[in-house]
Length: 336
Image (cartoon, rainbow, N blue to C red; front, top):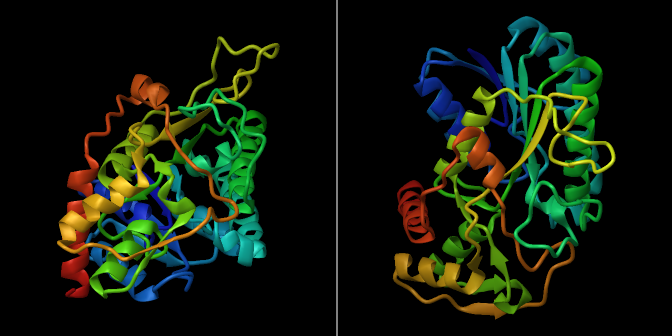
């Protein structure tokens, strides 16, 4: 199969692209290597892909309508895994327009490329952030998600709605994945584990929001990659049991459309996460205990029962193992 993977120089996209190439698939990658965070890290991820004969790199902005259309028409991918986006809840407070350009306009360009080039399945990144003010835990794809708390979350909810429309109108099978706090080697520098590790090793204090009274469904990247590829292989279908009188948000009766949670389904207290990191580094963190940040939620917890049932998804990496693997990678990559 020939896959388009957007965001192949990003954290999750890089791992997904490598796994596809390792099993013998062809990968056409789209990434603009933007400076939202350290471009040297993105380039280092890209360097992991270039030795593979089946890999093609395309440096391109998602919002470049003509460029994305040309990419699809010239490469004709069989399936698309769309992971590129403007990420980050807090950054959306500072630079909201970038979320519209990348996550809304860019996603429309991907949908149009799939529509006009016979793509057999689109798998795209949504986010656990869409649950917003929902306090009904664990979070289920069958819950209402109409109350986002950040523009980032709103853009991801918009993606789900746009995908459903294209799936209905043009028969494009589409699967959305709501990611829950992914971490691991080659991770993003704006995420907590990366920030904490760097600060502790440099002897600086870490910022602990909501004074540590938070839970996150931390999910190791290898488990995520397994689920993403399993979903790509399992083409979305119409739910024949769907009812318009009691509409299920996670499926559709008029379109080959699915939305899944993809997480560890075992929430961990933030202070426990920090404790594990301290043990792996061998050093106690200095902590700035701060109030909740705007746009954040106190807890996330994924109900992944649908994903387990449909594709056999089974996350297996404990926080203790995953954090240790990240610290080993960080020390090696940064010689820290």
